[in-house]
Length: 314
Ligand code: SF4
Ligand code: SF4
Ligand code: SF4
Image (cartoon, rainbow, N blue to C red; front, side, top):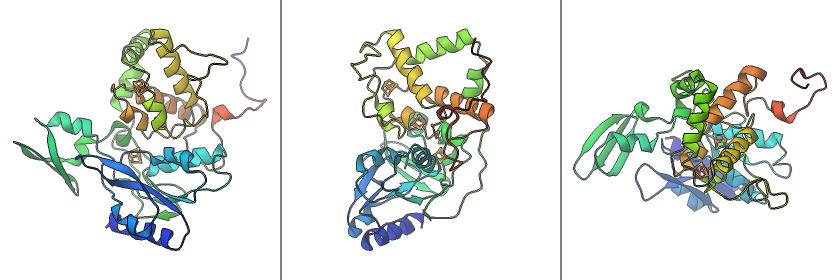
């Protein structure tokens, strides 16, 4: 139903030339996966899909198509990224048209794979249930038992500021208040947190998939690639790894929409959202600010007021 309406809207926008490109999700050859699709013709819209595996934050592609009139499919967190980028004047020439879909929460395929014995060959979603099939097993599972952690705590599933909303807004109530992993992390002493952080980061191979997947990482030259000045070596030493991750996390402070794309992209399963979600919580507690919710208010770390508290400056 939603998928059909989405195809119709995309077809209409391309037919009447309101946009010349639609960015959305299409089926992929593997089960539990979708792939980004870039559609230029009305006929091509038949390949658009919508289901619980539409996990990518497609907003990251907007940087590559800034010369096009783009219509883009967004979930709640993706729409928040667009709003955050608008505040940073990324769309001063042409704002993308947002085709918003209230999000049913997204299934974590790694959790699902761990729950069954053997390779998953087929997965079909029907309402709240997932029918999962392998060579010698067939199980029915509850969709909500396999959600991404960021989706369990999400309270902004209906895309804000969407130009078109496909489906009714959802009632905003997170399944969990703060994710238990982050709550446990907060209970640790500073030394224990550092140990956790170092252990996680020690697996990093510096492939930068986390950076590429994030819509908020769009610098023409990332600090890790800069040679003049040279901020960081190319090594996998603990100090270089810590430097990359600390700077990346702070660059996201007040800008992260909690989409989880960085963590999903990581081939080493590093729990990156521990850091980003913790920083999001700090920004909310200290400044009452959440990324991509208030259209006119810039992130706290992007503003300066002479009346700001300055007691920490000696
Ligand atoms: S973070 Fe929220 S809007 Fe984004 S995919 Fe998860 S539930 Fe949907
Ligand atoms: S840092 Fe990660 S969770 Fe935050 S916006 Fe970027 S990809 Fe999404
Ligand atoms: S995606 Fe994972 S392994 Fe690659 S740079 Fe990011 S944290 Fe490191």
